[in-house]
Length: 176
Image (cartoon, rainbow, N blue to C red; front, side, top):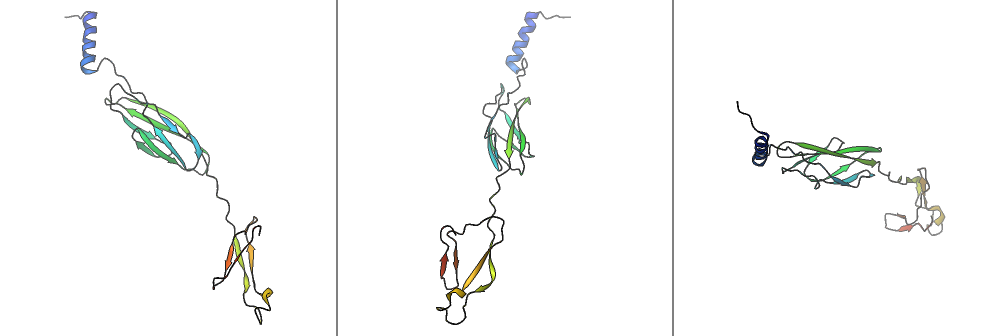
């Protein structure tokens, strides 16, 4: 039976480490930055994993954005969409050439989008009074249309125009 001296055993471990990398199994380090980290939907977020590193490159980059979607690569862009305030956990997993992995995560807060202002609901009333009885020049007050605000908020008609089939137009004045 042969026994190895501790000095000789240490020398074999060092030799093994130099030749085969078996002395130390360094796991990679997962790090990333993101911008922005919060905002309104749809929120476009840029992810940068350039700070991730490994003693044994190359690294594989796997992203899970926390909303059911994934991506690969050190630099990715993802758009978060939601109708309610939500916090998503974005997770990066880096894996080195030997299959060792490390993970990093960060939260992304997404607020609902700002609803567009309600569009005005202005309608023409019926009937149109487009042809006065008798001489048009003598009965101008009998030619008119009715506009109805069918919405729930006040509507500013400044700059709106009403035009007939001959191209004659009336432009509503400021403050109408």
